[in-house]
Length: 390
Ligand SMILES: [Zn+2]
Image 1: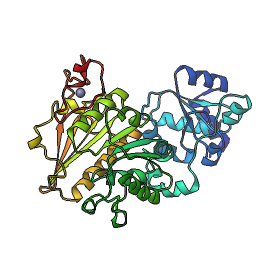
Image 2: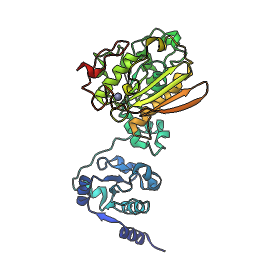
Image 3: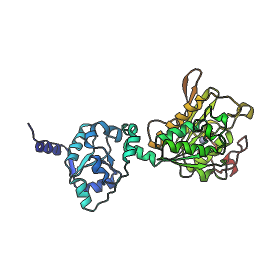
Image 4: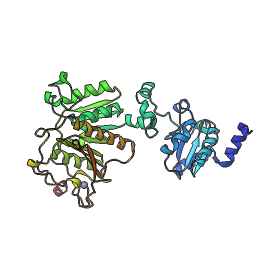
């Protein structure tokens, strides 16, 4: 029966060990993935900057979803170099081809005065609140921290904005901006679930803030009780990571499209009509933009606004929830977003269809020969296109 010492010796014979200075050079030169396999309480007191943290006990089950490229150089460390030797051996067995274990571990690294920092960690309350997220290796503590550091701007606190805001707040998106200049009306409550009868007559942004803060006090709700226009759109969207568009008119959609392209902020688009809903993602210069998909607006008589057309109240709940999901995927870099695809939902048929939306190489806003984007007010025809105003 081999002893612990035998096992350690055998593991070390199969792996490559580097000392702290070699590890530092390797991290800087390659750059390598830095993997911390210590326990959470050790990690919380200090770690190498940017380290991926997977406790040794969870290594086999989590590493493939956290470090997806098995050819990537990986520097593994623990406190002293023993657990990391076993971890490096395991990684090699899992098919990782460029793994080294750092001899001496974090203790030696720190004693030598090399760079380290105290990682941001969740409070016990947050760990409890987001427990079901933390169980997903694709989210985990790092992903939750990322959501808490994220900023999402919602255009409208209405039918689409309501479910999107509720789910984004519940998920712990740290900053949620809401722009809406309306007041709560009785006729909104059939679908705009952010609001309630006590709030009739109140500013929608104030009502939204109250609801979201009660749901999750972690969230900072920033309100904009203004009309979105060419004069303020760039200032308002600045600094947001994702825009969730719940507007229902063409001039605003074109305005937001052009401003978002300029600031390179992805837009999660949603729209509803009677029993049908649509959602897609416009990821600037990576996928199509709104003008690629709809080069010009339909004539006004073919595009009745929400106020004129009926809508079944559940429908925006479904589309707005899809928008929230796409926003979170964008924030966390998860899966395949709807960029380049239009999802169409027919509530009467209960069918979801997906249509490809290609990028238009001649798009006047994001195409190869598009000119400089100029933000200007658009009339109901949304013309002229921004690039023709050079
Ligand atoms: Zn375009």
